[in-house]
Image (cartoon, rainbow, N blue to C red; front, side, top):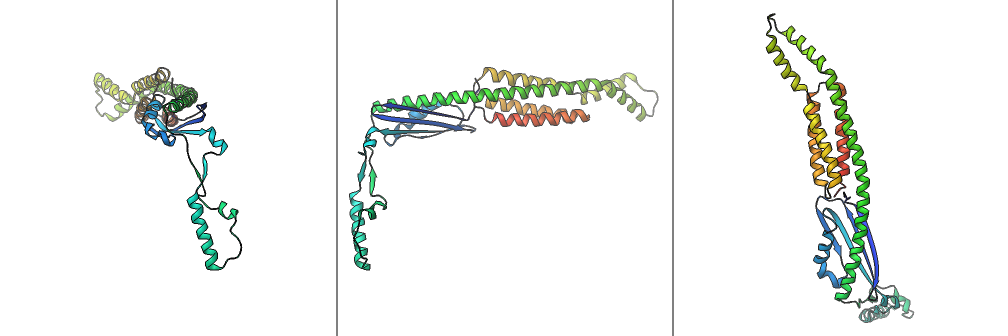
Length: 293
């Protein structure tokens, strides 16, 4: 199933007196770029976490955050007074009072607005049991993340299928124009050749050959057949493959090439207009494909 490169997933888990939160976000990127922020005591396990994430994404810039909150934090046990900072501030304030003869007493509120008076101490150290809980939360967030990417991928697929069908209709119109004007072009070429050739004794066989060559140069049937082949492969890829972004980009390049060839060969106003429409539609499809993994 086709997936989008943009997505979001979040999961929360309470285990072992810990509240664990994991969030996963992704945006478009040509390759897979994983940025992850783990709790301080688990930084050394970043490689293992990235290995887990790679099972859920093959392209895109993926940002992952995992946070821990201990129940002890709610009781204020992790907040401490920085005694050294308090003593330093006390000496400085009293020194200023004495030097500049400032009246009044030093009060508690004078300290509360100063930085580094309070410190936060993490009492959670690394444990294998907590790491298993973190991985469980990460996996839940990745499942939600993947589900969102798949849903967006389905919406993208609907839009792309509709646009490919629109291209198919335009190619069919081009072929109809080519069929209708074939006899007219043939007659015009015969008349033009006869007017140019001064010798009235014309070798009809050679004339027919030369005209056939000239007609072939402006015939776009082969290009239309190849274009429809690219359309068919595009739709098949959408339905049957997973990581399709690069393959679809290649097919779009081939479609553009065929459209350019048709435009250069077909000396016809309506066909030229259709070619412009095709190229515009291909560019819109290309923009959408940039969102596909």
